[in-house]
Amino acid sequence: MKRFPTMSVAVLLGIFMLSFLGGYLYTQSPYLLDKEAILQAPSTMHWMGTDRLGRDLLARIIEGGKVSLLIGVGSALIASLIGLIVGVSAGFFRGGVDKFIVILIDLFLTFPTFFLLLALISYMNASLWILIIVISITGWMGMARMIRSESFAIAQQPFIRVLRYSEVPRIKIILKYFTPLLAPIFLISFTFGVGGAILAESGLSFLGIGIMPPQMSWGSILSDGKDVVDIAWWLSFFPGLMIFLVIYSLSNISDYLQSRFNQKEMQV
Figure (tube, rainbow, N blue to C red):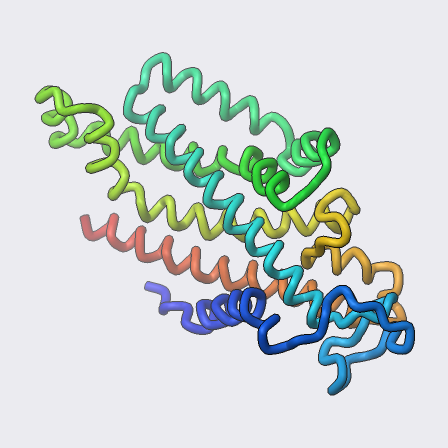
């Protein structure tokens, strides 16, 4: 069994604390323009350097982290809940409900996820909540398929059959007996979903159709630095590093949760 990813959890907690509490300790403004400090390299005055308008990069990383992490967690939570509801419905009710859900999932999977994102976002002005909704709409299918498969197995258990023959309310069976058994899959899918949502938002912002000024995210900060990467490496390096650390940490945590879940299944 894999060891508990202590370092990954510590890094993830550190990034969350930096993003949501760092502004109270590091008081530089992410919006302040300084013509005397344009494209300055990292120094004691500006720990991560400045951008093309003289704005402090660390302050912008802190402010952008709030947006990126909120989009990641919010999108993954909504997508996982949709996947949970859809997957349990397919596995529990089966028959016509299952056929309809399978067709719906296949229909969404027909389109590449990122191009579906581009198509949806092109018809509306991107904002924090719009991106959360759009990314969650395009990210629930994998969760639904995993939950559907596991729900079929749970539905065949003798105690579930007894409960159904005893005419126990369906909603009670689903909430009290299905949901706890599906919790490990939900957590694994959620951790993967957070990383996927952050990457999706970063990709959209990098293309210039994600978060718009004056709001900022790690993706939009990374996009701002791509034109001067040859003379100001820090503008692309630091937001890219933050994205990498979050994705890598979440991947390690997901792998650990999956190994624990698989070990419990083998013991059963």
